[in-house]
Length: 309
Image (cartoon, rainbow, N blue to C red; front, side, top):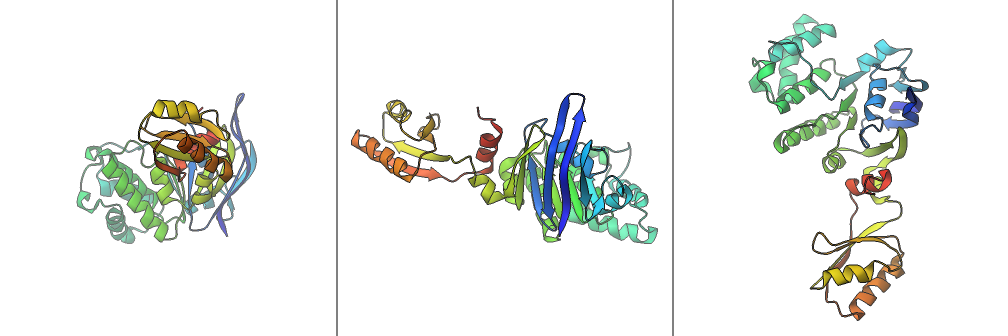
C-alpha cells in the first residue's frame, strides 16, 4: 500500500509552472528524499500534500484520503514541518507542545506523559522548562519535529529539517529520523545536504522546473548518471600533459585535474576504457591508480539537473 500517491500535480503562478504533471508514489514505511535546484517545486509539492495549497491540476492522497476533498482527515494523518520555525514569544518547551496537543484535542490526562515522551525522543528532556526563544537553532528544529509528532501521525512531511544546522545538530537530527523510520513512519524529506540524505532514504525523487526527472531506490538513482561514469586516473607526474592527452579520446566527455589527479567523465564502453589505459601506459606515464569512482547522489543530482554545466 502506498502512503502517498501523487498523480499529475500541476501548480501555476502566473506564467510560471511550479509543478508540471508531477507524479510520485511512496510506499508505507519508506523514507523518500525530494531534491532539486531552488525553485524546482519541492516546497510547492509538500505544501499541497499538507493541504496548505490547492493544485491547479492532478490529485494527491495521503493514506487514501484526498488532499482537496478530505483535508481534515489528511491533517490527522500527517505531521508537517516547514522550512522555518514559528513560535509565540515567552513560551517554554512544555507550553509549546501543550498548545499543539490541545489543538489536536489530546485528552488533558495524557498530555504530560506525551510531552515527556516527545522531548525524550528528540533529545530535549533536559530542556523541559526552558524558554523556546533561548534554545539553539538545532534544538528548535528538534522541538519543531516533536510538535509534528504530537498526534502520532503515520506520514511526516519534512521541508529542509537540517537547514542551517551545524554538523553535530545535523547528526542528531539524522539519528532521530532514522529512529522514526524504525517506527514505520512514512517520511517525505527535502534537503540540500545530499550525502546525508542518501544515508537516510530508501528512495530519491529529483525535481527540476516542476517536473520529475527520476525516482527510484537510492542505489539506482546514484548509478543512473545518464550512462556516464567517473574514472580516477592518477599518475606520478606530468598531469597537465595527461589531461591534454586524454581529452580527445573516445568516450571522454570531460577531464579535470584540480584534485591532483585526472577526474575523467566517461561515456565509453569497457573496451574504450581498457584502450584508454593501454594508451596512457604506452605513452610512458606511470599509472598509480586507474579506477571507476562509485557514483554518489550529488553526482547524480548534478548530472540530471544540469547543475554542473
